[in-house]
Length: 187
Image (cartoon, rainbow, N blue to C red; front, side):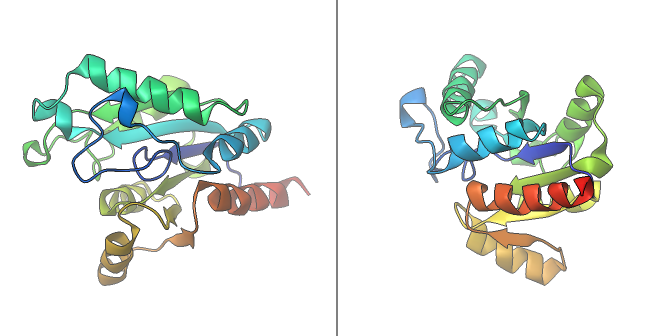
């Protein structure tokens, strides 16, 4: 399989999640190994995109401006070892609004695909939530479930719904697995 694109969930994959939302840049805590994993993907020529649900905006718990400041703090931390996040997309709508861009909807992935001329068949998604797993399934792309954040509930959900996934310790372990697959094609 050729892998040119990795989609990343934000909270629980790049930074520590909170059940009460990440509402201020000061709350951002980059998870161990993330900067190195981002650099390794970048060095391999793989594009990275953050796809995130941020319903705290729609609930009025934070502004779009604050959400962007949080994203910038996450991106700066993730890129601190020399890697590059190509772009980020988020849905600000509440779950009950059933927005097609909110995961498990695929609207944000499709926007990234169009904006950056991506090939979905050369993509994978790394996440920790059931919406992440369902979005990957709908897109027909491999899903890597990190053992962080909401992973235990997501693992049970995937089992119940028959959604396939690869279980990995964290983003660093996902990078190792994905780069191994990508290197196989270049041999």
